[in-house]
Image 1 (cartoon, one colour):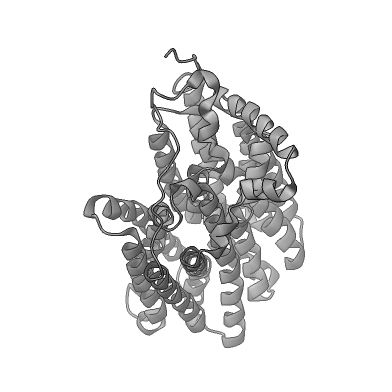
Image 2 (tube, rainbow, N blue to C red; image 1 turned 45 degrees about the vertical axis):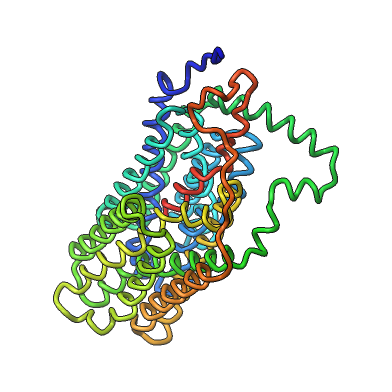
Amino acid sequence: MIRRRRDDIDGGWAWVVLIAVYAGIFIISTSTFMGGIIYLALLDRFRDDEAKTALVVGLNTGLLSLFGPVASVVITTFSCRTSIMIAGILTTSAYLSSAYVRSIGLLIVTYGVIGGIGNAFAGSSFPVVLGYYFEKRRNLMISLAFAFIGTGMFAASPLASFILDAYGMSGALHILGALNAHLCVVGMICHPSRIEKDLKVQTRKRRQELREKNWITALKKYINLDLLTNVKFMMFLCSTSTWNLTLSVCFLHLPNYLHLQGASEGNINSVMELFSIANTAGRILGASIVDKSGLDAMTIHLGTMGVGGLVAILFPTYGSLTGAEKAFAILVGLYTGSPNAIMTPILISLVGVDHLSQAFGLASFFCGIGFCLGPPFAGLLLKHTQSYTWSFTLAGTAMLIGSLLGMFSSCTGSGSKETSSLPKIGDESVDHDHNNWTDLDLSSSKVREEVCISLK
């Protein structure tokens, strides 16, 4: 069968888009992972409630996942370019306006909510763009995005410290705004590919068909309500919330803990860099172990959650030892990074491949819940106890509970035996002349959710 020519796929402009998307991922990951250092600066500047101050940064990062399903609607209705442009406008406006804010309450809205929603629009769009522009190398190009997330994590702490020292809080926020303004340039480069245009035609046809049906039928077409009654699946979603709660507490509050212990700025940056490297390594190791060892992904999930929880709970007891903070950063980084990489096989075992995109949407939402709740709870405990002992105990206990929930999930009932009905990429039996790209609607597929979750 003769394939229709698509000059913008796997070559030419696709490589320009690749560079732009990787730059956008670096911008978003760097901005969000500055949170721990920004939190320190906000405490010093406003001298306000620790919980309220933590909520500012928690929302900025947590809404990236929590608001992802709404961002995907914009992608499906309009385009990836539109979503990225909205992200650039929102994040730039959020950081620039925050430079002139004089209260934590208003900063929650500007930096936290508006900035977080902007991050969601960007984080949801980048992997979809790569999926639309690459066919033969699609999995490779999306996988390489993890490297740029890790690069952003590594650069975040020292860059935040440098711009805060050199330009102050107001200047640093202006720089963040200018940096995120480049997302608009990324959006202009990511014009719709032929695949995306074909999918838009199919989407319009589906909408026309849905108009002829009642709203309940239409809702069921987009949301599989049976997933919400799947006990195994819901337990696992709660487990993902606890893991992200632990990650957010350690990522956001560890710099302040070190500061209160009298650590120098250089030592704080080195610890956070170790945390970033270990978190990236955990993602890679988690995927490698599942792929090469043959171990069940849920078993790896339970083990990493359990050990990570114990490391966090026991930190107050060994935190006074020399080098303990670095060991803590490495271990927690590893054990909170691994669940990112093994989420896909777990969800497949719970709901089947056919429901994977909807399952990832819900998983992303629950990840956002945990990430938003963790920092303010830890800040509230710090305020009332004047110590981080209970904050880290909370983080570790949450992760242990998550491990138990995962255990109950694996023991309750049986896993899904469903198989995918999607055509394989590169399958010559697929009739490309009849716009069968609709079967690969990446605006709601697993690649969007994987990178969106990984950006935390």
